[in-house]
Image 1: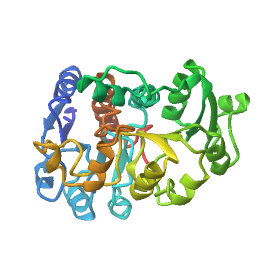
Image 2: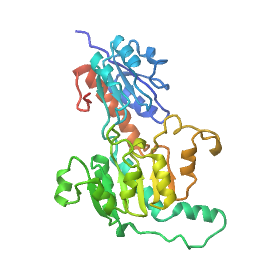
Image 3: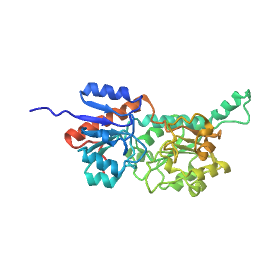
Image 4: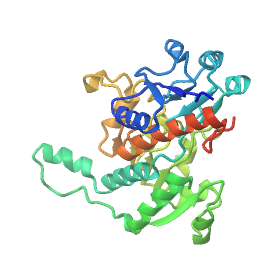
Length: 336
């Protein structure tokens, strides 16, 4: 009996991903076509003749694109990331397309950046960098805070939230947490509070690790900031839609928020991972407002961007895609 040859097309492959894709393809003996462009209406025709598609993008997976994939016989779609909120669920169900994601490519990568940026905020490194660049080597008035004297409130205790908790514990911080679903081990430690309001009232630092859903869009709004302690620090390496940017700017202006570290931004699509040539050319005034503040640290969605995480995102997604094609299922399959 002739062996079936699996063929996969991988969209949006960056230069940093290509070596891990090539290594996997060589090791598995499976043909993978790497396409630099994202999967959309203008590129979907390139998928003809393939058995499965591996993708990564922030733009929508529209019904038109998914219908076309199905018409080519492609019913196996593997995302190289966690979020599936940009996938047209109706089209997935209608076409009986199976979808996988990579739910845990490297929790430590996200948690480490969160902790790094928090320490930069507490030690005022951005302010000192600016002072030193201008020849000012004085200490005052920029005295620092110590994390071991603070309470960190962690919102969402999935893999990333738990990794962040371990790091914050290492600094000696007191940890409280909120999640609808309690982790049994953390439950034993007694760190959960019953409501977000309790966390807001107690936390000196709030570290946000929630997925984006319709229910929690703009969960950090004027009302939420009003319930927080004066001088709170906000850390968001999770999803931009969780924070109402205008409300955050107001909270920074009033001093309610002492500092913020943002690796995500609600209007980041088309802006992050783009070279505009100059700061003035960045086409978003609210984002520039935040970047210019010494007590705000903005990074362009790079928390995941480590060698370990990128390798895992590529190779885990490829493994899942093969499982969908050959077995019809995978442990990372997403239910819609």
